[in-house]
Image (tube, rainbow, N blue to C red):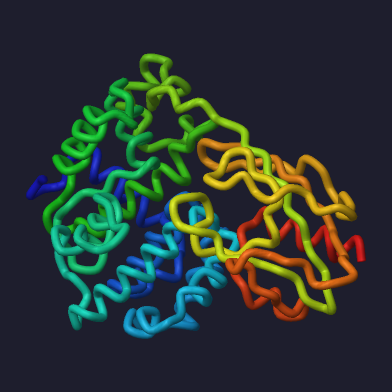
Amino acid sequence: MSNTLTPFASTVMDWFQQNGRDLPWRATRDPYAVWLSEVILQQTRVEQGRPYWLRFMERWPRVELLAEAEEDEVMRMWQGLGYYSRARNLHEAARQVAAMGRFPDSYDALRRLKGVGDYTAAAVASIAFDEPVAVVDGNVYRVLSRYFGIDVPVNSAEGRRVFKALAQSHLPEKAASAYNQALMDFGALQCTPQSPACNECPLAPSCDALRTGRVDMLPVKEKRLKVKQRHLSYVYIRWQGKTAMRKRPSGDIWQGLWEPFLAEDDGGREQGYGLPAGAKLVKKGVKHVLTHRILLADFYLWEPESEPRLSEEYKWIAESQIDNYGVPRLVELLLQSISEAG
């Protein structure tokens, strides 16, 4: 941490004054609003996340109101953002804050909230409370790695330590919020992952990656886990204007979200029940990509003459009420296919 602006910090912050993004959560220092934006923007582009933030703030303008909400409504509001554990953690953390009676106002206290890691705690602490702690996200890793010429893998334990310390060493003690937001925006807009505008970059004269021809090589990442495939067969059961759905169990993808009858699942804890006789194929091999998994789903429609016997986990829902239930994106595609098929 620096008491004076280093040349690196000064250049990035000057750039930010002219080029920083106009984002709605930057118009407030409310820690709830800042925290909500950071949770939404994990694994989500700003333009996709912005309308979700606005809807959440309109529906639950205070953390106490979010804490009182039903989980199903929170999950439904989150629908389409993916990584649904973020929504469950958000809801649980809101309840923690409500129980405390106030929002935690330090990095260490914020870290104790459900789902709040180093980055989110640093962002909220610095932006809402001016605590001099540096944030390090993908954008920051990229800028630091290129400018200082560091090839330590950013997704390694050593990399996290190195880049955290480096970001902290240039953080101006009295301007943590501006520095952190400047560095994030610089990576998002100027020092982009592909085809960065190096010819127009204010850091170009002293950028190690540009000088050594390594802009496209940095930052370095360790190899990812092998992506596995998983096959699912869903059956939309239509009986007397109703359909059967269940809430996804814990310990698997999409916990707490709703899905139609799952006939077959070759990768989950359950093997399913098998396809019922008379089920008609609507779509085959619909692809949906998760972080370390590719889902391939077949969609069927079944219209039995009498009420089928299902396990107690399934609930009969009026077809007109399906929109009131939070579902994963893959199930959204199924429902669209059924609607198009009539």
